[in-house]
Amino acid sequence: MKILTAIPVYNEERHVEKVLDEVRRYSPNILVVNDGSTDRTGELLSRQKGIEVVSHSRNRGYGAALISAFEYAQVHCVDILVTMDCDGQHEPARIPVLLEAIDDADIVSGSRYLRDFRQDTLAPQDRRLINLQITSELNSRFGLDLTDAFCGFKAYRGETLSRLHITETGWGMPLQLWVHSARLGLRIKEVAVPRVYLDPTRAFGGVLDNADERLAYYRKIITAAELDKLGVPSTPLSGQPISCCESNLWTKGCCR
Image 1 (cartoon, rainbow, N blue to C red):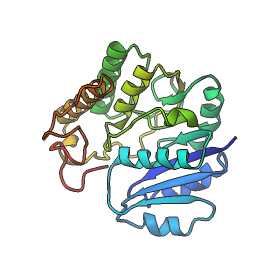
Image 2: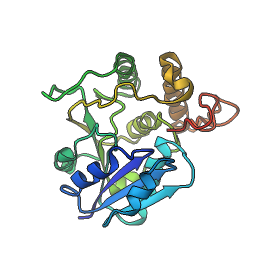
Image 3: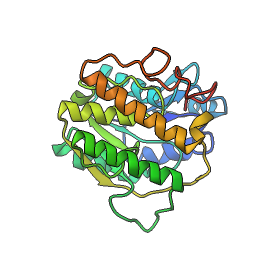
Image 4: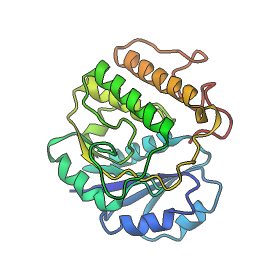
């Protein structure tokens, strides 16, 4: 069975080497998607041995980096794709937990709110409240049973990736994923992972640093994804389907 761990990175010179050293202990195959980093991330990645790197010439967004990982996994016939962030929030030691759980699931998603861990840190209040609200709305509208709609620590079956049609390139990508998964009737499972915020002041960028704007953006993503799965063209922003980099919810340089 071929297992691949994919890590989207954008300006992660502080964490990337340490994270990769730890991931190697649990995953023999590693893909890094360098999403147009402007710091030393690219230089540090060039020194790494035994990893694959896909580089975006410009910063295209968190969702775009994951879309590239999905495409890579399909082209290379990966059986299980694990995705995780590179900012120190996700513990590579939990990769085996995801892999064990996917035995009877199509998607396994980490949840920072399923149970408590001794190393848990407090989530920024606005992020926790928005997560609660959006998670509740997804559950109510689509018959899901999630506790954490936004965790990027996930495992996907390879055949599942070909059934998804993810187009959202920004931070709202997980919400489009959940709507599509619900419509496809995918088997979804959550596993508990620690809640670690090494830098609670880390910004989203642009107007999304405003909690009200961020909540409105997330709701538009959900609505657009629902209409898309129903076969209804969705053009809520500027006559185009919602995409963080193309909508007026983002300013130059904020697609991450």
